[in-house]
Amino acid sequence: MHVPDGFLDAPTSVATGVVAVAGVGIALRGARRELDERTAPMAGLVAAFVFATQMINFPVGAGTSGHLLGGVLAAVLVGPWTAVLCLSTVLLVQCLLFADGGITALGTNITLMGIVAVAVGWLVFRLVRAVLPPRLSSVAPAAAVAALVSVPAAALAFTGLYALGGEAPIPLGSLATAMVGWHTVIGIGEAIITGLVVSAVLAVRPDLVYGARPVMRARTLELHTTQEEPA
Amino acid sequence: MEQRPHGHKLYFAADSPVHRAPAHLKLLALLGFMLVVVATPGTAYPVFAVYAVILLGVVVVSRVPFGYLLPRMLVEIPFVVFALLLPFLATGPQTTFLGMTVSQHGLEAAGSLLIKATIGVAASLTLAATTEPHALIDGLRRLRLPYEMVQIMAFMIRYLDVVTDEMHRMRVARESRGFRATSFRQWGALARTGSALFIRSYERGERVHLAMLSRGHDPRGGRS
Image 1 (cartoon, chains in turn brown, red):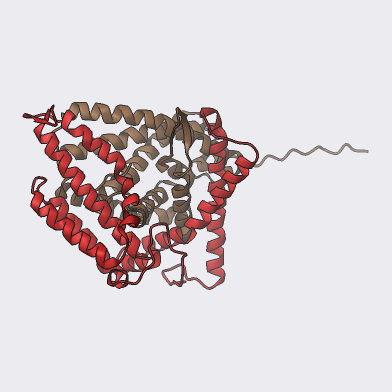
Image 2 (tube, chains in turn cyan, blue; image 1 turned 45 degrees about the horizontal axis):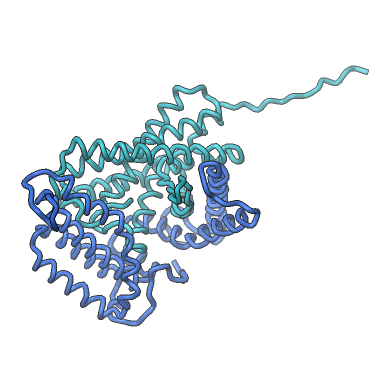
């Protein structure tokens, strides 16, 4: 769900715009470390992938379905800095080409879904990965937990912004409870899908998964040879 | 960057002063207009009427039919629902509206949100309907969006149809094998589609990069 124009007042919108510009600027530097000179084509293709994946409908039952937000998925697959760039580009394209999300709220949307969700998700992922045994099979559960936390974290950040620049006096406690409660439900779906997609990629191309690199690096080549018996 | 994308879903091909206007000016106009709209106090209804007339004027000049824009304004539905809830959630002095006791501040905020969001969606749609993607990218470059962001966006738009078509082919393949997504039990298969899509997109990115290098692309800022 994208924040439209007029949801937050002008000063808050401009302030989140500044945060978004700074965040994307830092991410541009960071992404060069993750992808070096390949940044533009790779991030562009991953952004197209995130956009397309958001179109896959996951049936929830009773005729309703949900879709992925993809922040943590992108961070685990290609690295957090590239993920910030990809999500920001997706939001920019959705705003300008699909009229989805207001142009004055673009900074808010990038800050919430591109920066907060990815940053919180990546930190949680690192934390859980450090706690779990260093095996390839730990990566997907860590990604799922990170996805679960990232969605209500972004909702909480939105509540904070609403406290600063919201138009209607809603009691903040109940708004925060409602936002975090509802987005935890969404987060459970996000967690399951993220975990399933990451484990499916790990099964085929573990070398591509950025979040699995420490595990892959620790692997050593084992050579099993049979010693020839002297005749 | 020579590219002729095949339009996109919202672009409405026509020849009008709005279509011909440089994209960077249209972007600045949209941003400036919407900042003014958002900064206007929520109860200044005559002022909003003026904004709406300005916007309608631009739409008329652009020759994009209203019948084309109106159905596409449904994007804002989720927030209309939120706006309708506001009068019941907000605190402060109560008032009666259509026979219901609701919060006065909530009612005003709901009205303000509905008006501003609707103007915002209509204005964004007008930009999207009158500006081709490559013109938009060029406009963003002129507005000094970092060159790398412009490139990322250009690659994304250039390959968006390729990637979504790939996803569509996978769906056709799934369904021709008798697959129907009805409940949680199918999530595994859908997630594997996502994983295949990622691997194909990533590998396509690598091929694109190699193709750029083989055509003499200079990775240190030179243009390909």
